[in-house]
Image (cartoon, rainbow, N blue to C red; front, side, top):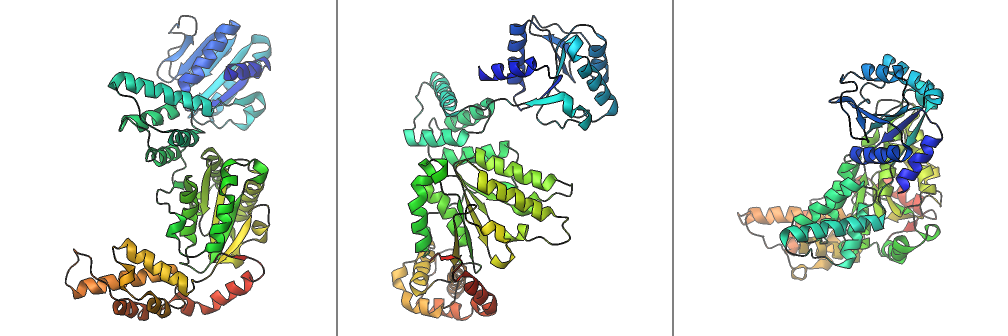
Length: 495
């Protein structure tokens, strides 16, 4: 087994302290036990509940029953016997001066006494005094073949218990396995079991549930959110140039080698013009998870933590691949000012490096309302593939938007004059057209004195609602003109 081989190599390098960060404590202990038996080394484990006890050769309790870590470490320091000493609950005490001194004393005995300390925890920050005496070891995660084996094992277990075979199909099974990548063996097994026992089948509906549960297990829910509500290109009116560009790259993103795989795009334009819906449509049409990176949630008052949060979020995106990462209103996090102590610049540096060097299939959709606030380094080709300007919809697209929103509310779009509505909403964004439909709905419902049945909307009611609306193209005419001037020659029209 590769983990046993790699761990044995680290021990042979005579590193006094090994740090293993994992949520799979039983698996790590099993690996250490097998390795100790193979090497004929004594293996002892300390926990807060059991104190220090022997593992491996007929486990013997009672070596040092104290739950106080100082006593256990002092016991190990004073004994003559070498071996491997695993501390499972030391992370709350690791920074205490006496603990640091005892760990250092034992580590310095390593060459003549053969004592190796293993610090095992879900997360552990090693004090600076011990950094040069320690090394980190990471348990390998299951690959796709091993994940498929886990699915087969859980399917057989369910069949043996229930008497019925698990139903699925090959495309769904492949998507499930792809979405399990990056999980530990135990976490993957739990999610597989949950997908099966619900209805005795692995269906397309199980895949987003597994992706969301995976995100929560990785403890980034909030900074990196899973978006259930995706869309299709058919839900997006207009933006034909951008749709064609994306369709040409879909197969390359899902199947091509790293050098040919598209990296992402930047969308900017007037608010409410469909940028967010377009981001959702990419993921929905490509059939991959959509993750939303909340740049505001990254910020932390402690020095360096904000950048660390971003690095962990981007690593999580790679583990969730293939996926689409949507960074909404990216300019608000990267614009920065003189009061942020350089945090925005460090964030920008971390993001630019990742955009240029990532190897996993992660497609980035960054959206911005104020393109002038973005740093020029972000817009260089090689980080993102294209910059699209999303302008206000023309008359034909406005008709299509009315058709979509009327259809969503159960109305026959052919019962109204779409041409008249398009003319009445010159300069309206897609979001403003939706609000015209909503406002007309309320007005019609009030006139009919009912909110329980769908009112019948007329062209006149919709035009009246449009006339009562002041679009952003009027209230922000100067800003819109600046965007159009900047986009000319610098960006590709998404329409």
